[in-house]
Structures are given as C-alpha cells and as structure tokens.
Image (cartoon, rainbow, N blue to C red):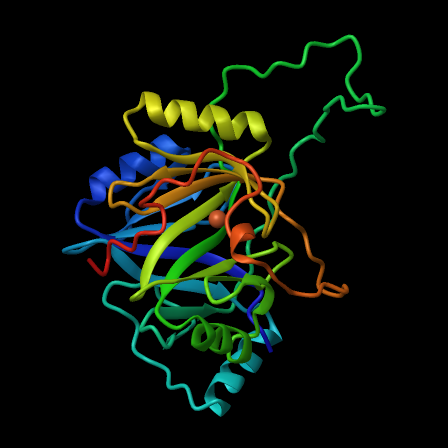
Length: 302
Ligand SMILES: [Fe+2]
C-alpha cells in the first residue's frame, strides 16, 4: 500500500488573478475554469498540477496524491487500520478519491490515478571533457521561454518534523530519502528524490512548489524573464546537496516560492538507497548566492 504520485497542490490565495498571472509568467498554462478555482498545468502535461482558490490569505488548501489500481483500496484500508478518519472534501474541492487530514491539519486527497506520461525531451547535447556530443554546431540556446515540464515536489513547513515523517511514511507509504537533523526532511512516492519536503517552523505552512525544466539555461532564462516581468528574484541559481538539483526560486505574490529545477536525483523503486542525515551546513546548497535572510520565513504564522 502506498501512494505513487504527487498529482497536484491547491492554494487558497487573496487574489486569484495575480496568482494566475504569476504562474503563467512562470511558464504554466491555465485551463478554462470549471469551478471557482484557477487551474494551472505545465504545457506538455495533460493534467492540472496547481489550483488557486480564493480566500482571505495564502495557505495550503489541499494536496492530492495518486494511488493507481489496487494501491488505491490498499492505501484506503491501511489508513482505516491506522485509525485515521476520512473527512468530507473541503468546499469546492475536486470530486473523486477520498480525503484525510495530516497531523498539521492539511487536507489530503487520495485519488485512484497516476500522472499522464510526459513526452520526453531530446537528449541533452553538452560537450564535457572527454565527452563530445555536439560537433561543428553552435550550442547557445535560442531566446526561450521557461517551459516547466512537470510538478515534482512541494515543501511544507511543520512544527513537528518527526510526527509528519511518521505520518507520511507509515500511513501513506512515502519513503524517507534524506534529511538534515531536525531541520528538514525529504520524502518520495515516485522516482524523484523528493515529492514532499518538510521544513521545521513554528507552525504549518506552504513554502514552495518545484517544477522541472529542460536544462540549466532554462533555469537561468526563466529567472531572467521573471525578473523582467516584475517578479522579485528570490534565490539562485545554485545546486542543492540533498536531491542534487540545480535550482532557482522565484518569490510568489504571497512570499512563498516557485522553483525551477533540473537534474534531481532519480531513485528507482527497487534499489539500495540509504537515507542520510546531513549536517546543517549541507541542508540547503553546495553552491549558489548567499541564502536570503527571509528564505525560510513562514509568513503564515506571522
Ligand atoms: Fe525544492
């Protein structure tokens, strides 16, 4: 029993139009509204991955995980056996699946679904010492628009890291990939190094959602375009230690973030991956600009 995919996240935000503009500038496309939410998806993916509901202030509305085929009933049964009660869907939430709350009060939707297949990019052709893949051909990129391919993970604040790790691994079957002390932990339900990150704070909150792009050029050009469009740059480019991804974070209209990333660690289902507990200095990055002071600030508990 286990969930196998992070399907989407939903935020409640004070201005849906501003949120829609931010994510469209970021590179997502919006689907025509079928309800009161703004529905956003990466252009190549035939599924929405971010929903924006109206509300008094920014907060996480819910997260949806996929448990395809037999995993759906098995996960539901395991949740029942663990004594976790199902709840009614939050008002206006998408139909389907069943709902529970995590120990921080976040609504979680488990759906009998998997993510649609993503059309693969052509292989990267990079020249490196001793490995030439591009011959007699100019390699600089076109003036490209950032084009997120898929949602990979969300990172949430939590006041009790171990309680949440325990819930998501024991009840939903996620696996711990790595952590850093009692600061941060990374869990996966797919081959991505992490689909859910948990960062210690004084209360629950939404920190960021991360989208995969095609290469490091696209990260940097995405960052540049977002700055041109008036969105405050936040942090990057850099490279994480935990998960190994190149990153750039853009501050969203509510002081949380959207991340462009590339080259995250890939962990197949059956492999010998031992979670490591990293020292504090490795919790965030191997290289990059200095961490902005407010990067870890949870504005939902101010
Ligand atoms: Fe991230």
